[in-house]
Image 1 (cartoon, each protein chain N blue to C red):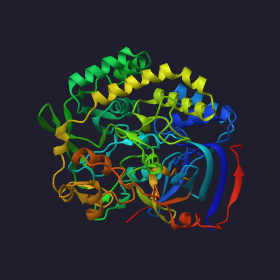
Image 2: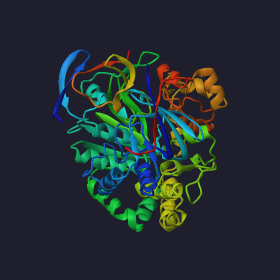
Image 3: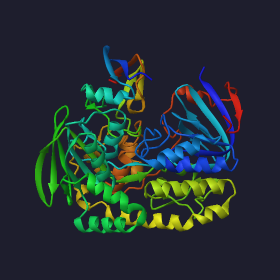
Image 4: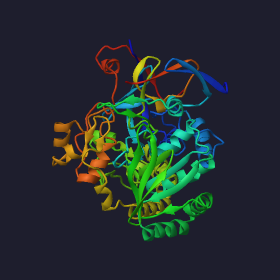
Length: 81
Length: 432
């Protein structure tokens, strides 16, 4: 397994350590995960796939729980707005 | 078209934390065909999250190795959304799983209880266990100022873990009283199993202020938390921080048991000494029967696995150890009961339901969970009330009823695989 993987966060190419979740990529780059019903920005809460606050658009698929996604090379991560 | 895989097995186990691992292992070692499912991508549950053998816990390594030696078929990234007494349906990234079983073992564990207070929806406010899970999935916390708040034994464990990872743990704010905490501490130190663990944690968190009678009143910041206002012994102070890790102990995940119609007792799945629920052929083990930690989960899992394979005598041998863990459950429950002051934390515009943005003031107008749901959509978002339900139960004393299928949000494609004639392949037994 490679030590680092290349991810695309909002189209921007960055490298992260292998084993990093998509949620953590967002947190460490100050990118919010989703925008709430009333327009508030939200970030992960439970870290274990229960609360759905971390849902993001991953590889074009919306509403994916980013805390449950371990980054693979080339993964595309965007806020779920 | 979405792929549908069909399994037929003797024993299906839902949840691959310590209880599920022990249950699947015991049943498979007795020759039963076993299917073990979990919605996480790896086994271990929350406590052994990311469970790599050789990791911190020797028990984790030992059990994971033992499980791998069995023929139990392990399916990860699978969320069970439909269940009956003989069959379950789960969604994976590539399709659906349809499993027929003789016996079902529910090992669905527990989750954190979150309570609303002003600012709790700000980025940087995470669960206590939530912070630990995020660190385990790569969150760097070295040099970060972290306040850990809420209640329960988890707070100290998370403080120790974050400190070990280089975080500056500013303080632990525990809502319970000194007296109750001391009673819990003494009972943990006196119990053989827990005493070494308790002493270790005390040593590891040495030097971190550990306040009792303390809780978060507000999280402050605009786009990220910048400080938390804590109440401590009746006085308030603002403490700058990068993260507030806040959880109010754990609540059992009982949704699947409730959907099946299993009886609950005090909010937990009711089981007898053989982990049998009120329904024949359905067993339950681990935190969903009572919050007691890893040892309890492993014991109950083993008992359930032995019972599912007809080994009642061997299950009976574990009864004395099980009784000891039950005393620990009671001691935790008493020590970390929520104080009533926490009910006064949300303001009128503080959100309770984070999925549908329903504020406390809107909910106050209702008399039950059901009417609140119907009128405000509280609990009807993607988490299906898993966060706000436990909060509403505490704040308003509402019974959280009316759990519906599908148990988790699923794609229409997955639902479509339930239709007659959908393409499927049958795999008999748990053999790999």
